[in-house]
Length: 203
Image 1 (spheres, rainbow, N blue to C red):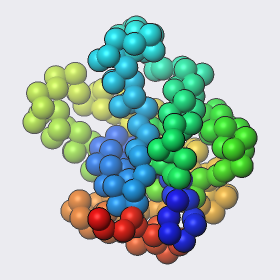
Image 2: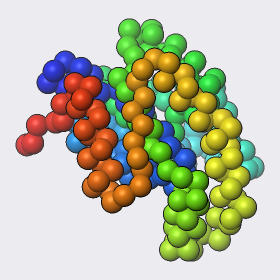
Image 3: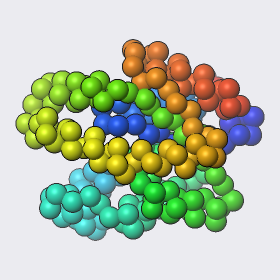
């Protein structure tokens, strides 16, 4: 919990290539909360060879998205851990309206709600350019222009609509996602501080 008593329960949303993973990690560090990334949790479980990891790996290798029920199970388990009691930053969940309802139900049971939703706004052309550059730098031959366009289409069709739900609740902070890393981080922090959140005190 922040020093003002306002819990930093955050969600960061943005299309692939928006930099939400990088910014999410920065914001979580600044406000002293854990990042809860479904992708990271899945990858960790796969690497550790857990039962969950084996289930997830089979789904991913078949080229499918991890089902909502399994994803929700993973997130609920992570949010129930002690380090997330005072706040958290969600990255990658919820990714559709069904998952929004699932998260709402979980938080309602705990008499909690999200404090803010950070929307990183990046033009489609910028996202594509960043993803193509990343694919070239990392030698990711599977990140073709066709694959990238398909991922962005899925985001626009399934994930973007969740922002309308959160806008109705008045908790969306739309952030210009174009600029240097520091400029974008500063924009996010300024918007959250305007809501009454206080960054973690320096050690």
